[in-house]
Length: 160
Length: 160
DNA sequence: ACTTATCCTACTGATAAAGTAGGATAAAGG
DNA sequence: CCTTTATCCTACTTTATCAGTAGGATAAGT
Image (cartoon, rainbow over all chains, first blue to last red):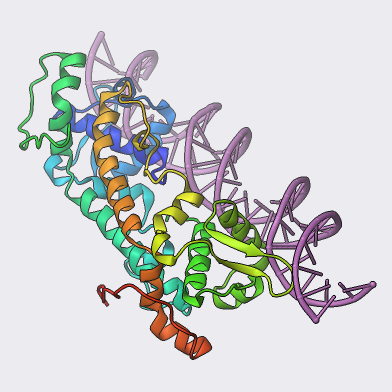
């Protein structure tokens, strides 16, 4: 339960943009797709923009779009932006001084590091092109039949 | 950063007991080994006792000891006790109804489930006999030279 | 009895999450 | 210009959880 709602919302927003394709979506249109309070989503989109993950245009016809091809945006990048270091515990942060004074605590550390590395590995190999392709079928069809599908990486069938 | 200090303290306490062996340790003695406020540790030990992970005896000479052999106590058990379900996000909890209304959110779920499963797998295969054996060398020697070492599972050299 | 420990419950301060609110700025269309 | 539609930006509020303190009740040794 350590993924905050903000992070959840951010990942959904980026995924919605990846699914939508090259044209931009306004906050209002995003709210229609993912279920998020609009003024809160505005803040989130601003943060995504500052981080260079999305790009924005103002005024009527304005909105947000991805700033890079979706296959170059990993889940890890978005999650790290909102969650900070992905270690389960402070002493397992990547740039941590080698040793802590207490041996009992330190022995546990290598396990926390295992958890950290496994988490990062999963999030790093998951990109938004793959996610969009996986959702593309059902979601796009149900909501806006006939959207021109973007070039998608092979959908890995996953686990069902 | 999702492991709370309480969980951290609890795992350290259980490890200290595993290292110490068959005899019991008082809260005061535990405080000497792991760095934790004593009245807070009391609460934590109570919770570990209610869960059947440790056993207690009262009065002088009293204290806590493990309620099972350390190789039967996994890190997963202790962590789950204090952290609840180990899913990174609510919708990835193990006994979750199959589908959520929103497809965009749901597509991300399988990735959250991957993170959950990887985390659980690591914590389940890590038991306190292994952890104690890994710490046993340096720590036991430094603090109470000559403690009778308990039967330990093979120390897996890990990563250094 | 007296000491040493666990047990039990209530209370408190600090911090972060999760939003609300309200306006400033910029671009498009008439 | 002037209005509309959008992003942009900052401050505020509310709620919950974390991380402890505090203080006594109970039980077991000596």
